[in-house]
Length: 156
Image (cartoon, rainbow, N blue to C red):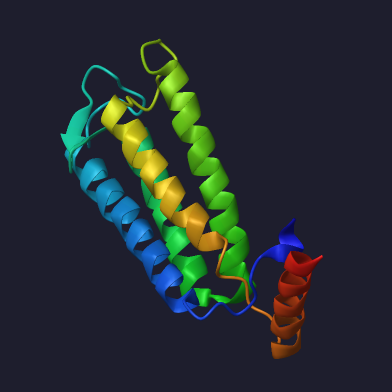
């Protein structure tokens, strides 16, 4: 339940930094991928390029740029905006990884995913999703109430 996320966790800056690093990776990969695949068909699978160890086409490169900017922007803003976006990004990246795994050897693989792409997507989902568990912000009274609730729940 969302009310049991820790509030004002002391490692929150570290988790936000990890999300920014993950977002930077997505952004750099997207920019380099978009440059490397310029001139290719948008959803090409045959002319997909390998960039930073991952396969890409212009569509996936552009999607990576957008995702990276959103994750970085949310974590620069911070507060509960970062919590909401990181939670959503973790779920979406997990779903994208699962869908890509299921569609990899089919004609529906429009983003030219390879197994390496799926693994990296799951790693990014794990980093961002785990960080979202600890980056919730609230007033000191809410943090104290959450701590008391967690400790009282263990006793009962």
